[in-house]
Image (tube, rainbow, N blue to C red; front, side):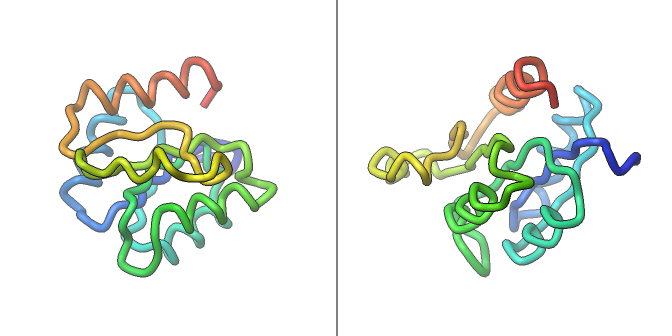
Length: 128
C-alpha cells in the first residue's frame, strides 16, 4: 500500500463483525485496517492516512465518541468522515452536541447493503 493511499479504519471489538465489514468493503476495493480498541485506533490514525473511520460506540478502553472527539480535534483527521455503529434501540446520539455527532450512524444489526450504501456515499461523493 502506498503511504498516500487512504484507508478505512474499522474500530470494532468483535472480530466477526469487523471481518464482515472488511468483506463488504472488499466489493469497493478499499484498503482496510482493523483496531479492536480505541488505543489501537489512535495509533492507526497517527500512522495511516485515514479516509474513513467506522467505529462502534462501546469500545473496551474508551467510547466511540471519545475516539470521534480525538479525530475531530486532530488536524490530520478533522475532516475525515466518521460512521458510528450503534445498537438499534440507542437514540442517545440525537441529544448530542453537534460537535460530537458522527457523519452517519448505522444500527446493529445491519445489512451488507446498508454498510455498502453508506460507505459508497463517502467514496463517490467525498473522494475516498
